[in-house]
Length: 240
Length: 240
DNA sequence: AGGACACTGTGTATCATAGATACAGTTTTA
DNA sequence: TAAAACTGTATCTATGATACACAGTGTCCT
Image 1: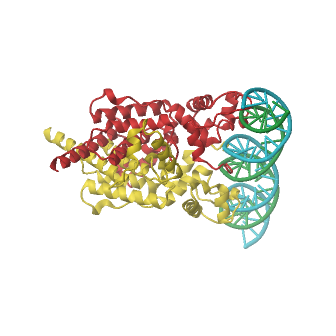
Image 2 (image 1 turned 45 degrees about the vertical axis):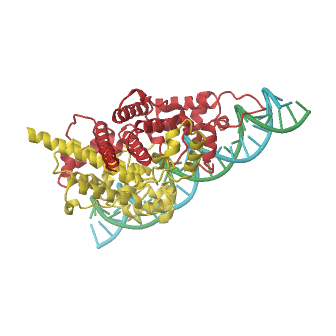
Image 3 (image 1 turned 180 degrees about the horizontal axis):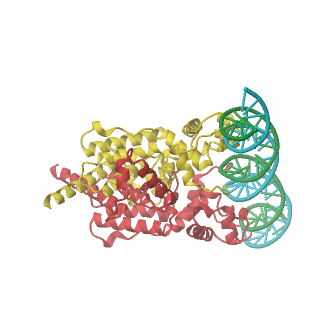
């Protein structure tokens, strides 16, 4: 973690296949896709912390320095991992109605992130997305294409749903739920009961079981809210 | 990053003032609060990456090893930083109506995170919260106390709002917005225009300006959705 | 057609920084 | 007076990353 310019342009060239083809020199033992796949395998099995240049190189039977010929640095490695793991977005053309489409989209996105629990924490920040990942928001936008929302509002809506799914993925971001089942959860419960006078609402709330999931509750609320916005827009344009 | 058991119990004792008082021995040059404040100052000025044991110790005129007498490791340092920076939650008793209360809460939370842009990225994951931080969700729950929602639903609603504010804080999690103004944003725009045939919706959408903020749009949708849930519940209990 | 050379993949050695442990020296108070 | 606690020096491990030498392969020139 010393220099490394973190060149976003280089990442873009790698992800979008704009690397100039090699002319001379020995044939590389692998290609970037294989590197990405092995790194994904490591992350799936042992978590993102286990993914180091060293580790991925060893998994391929290389020294870590050889790896730098495939990816310019760890940031690029992560980028190709995401693109390799994210998969293809759902085809929503078979579903009727923007709400059902968006529901299906949320379900698929949740499934993809469940398959790779490290993905949510990594698909964050100012970064360049690859073509496969980019096709996800494109797919989600198609769900709202027929609504009266403005283009910007559609994008905001897509992000609203996506971010909700991200936040409710306990494996990657458990703290956003307060109660996650992790080792800190039981300690927090004890602390709240011990200080029930200062935190009466939290102290009683935390014991309550739930009929629906946190994710379902939030998704329904969001979709209800979007429905409100959609009908509002439709009415307004009807008035005009 | 070798061993360090990451004991949540130790963090809890530190945050909730349960450390056994020292008896003999020289008086420490500082206390944990001073350490936390110093670290917060560094994070505010130069970002969370600048916060290292070394750096914080130097800022206090200590070697980094002396710092380990105040906090057991970096995880604890972050924990006390959060508790020091998060501030006190808003008093919502003056606001009337759960919706207005929740709006005010969101505004205050957003302001707190804007003051310390590193906070959102750190208040995530399975962890122990300190008393000041805990009082934030407690305050938010009070906003929904008079509604017909179940206790669990109120907690879900609070998390829904909080997570939305977190996600829309571009400084900490810019990628959740696709367009953030970072160096990757302009590259993504070029890539989309270059591949407008594959991403027609994204390619046209990204140019659109917006009347309201992404954060405002999402918050309104969420509150509309919650309103739907509240009235639904009220109607149901009226039927019974 | 053949060879020189440039280019590229790989490995060894090395650096910088991070968090963290071990331990000795020193201060303070029970 | 002695145990306990604060601080500093030295050291360890792991990480990402750079520098450089060596080897294989294709291009281009003759």
